[in-house]
Image 1 (tube, one colour):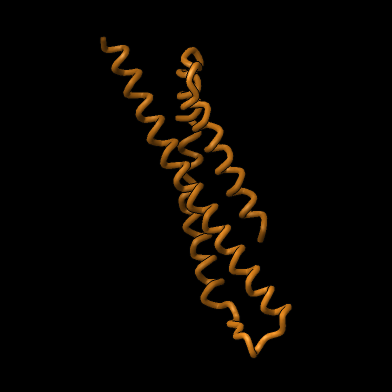
Image 2 (cartoon, rainbow, N blue to C red; image 1 turned 45 degrees about the horizontal axis):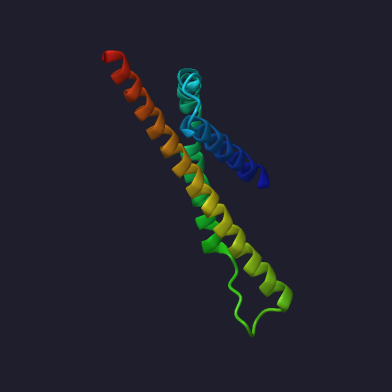
Length: 123
């Protein structure tokens, strides 16, 4: 089950790197090529959105089906396992939120750069 989180982490990392290259000052000569590459990568990266929705449903299901651990009823090892599970779910939810936010930012920045290029060429 960890492979899906690795895939999402790599997708978020790729989005972050592309966003960094698009917004980095001093790359005006490479900007048109970068925008073309990012525009061609946006459609395949759109698959991140339903994948994140599936992972959110998975986190919710695990949250609803987890065994409850009261202080008197469980051993310290069970309590520790319970706490680790909660922390992993929170970390994974943060990863999902960052992947979705990065995709939205990448889409928006690419659109803005395309508008800027159209304005430059129309003058």
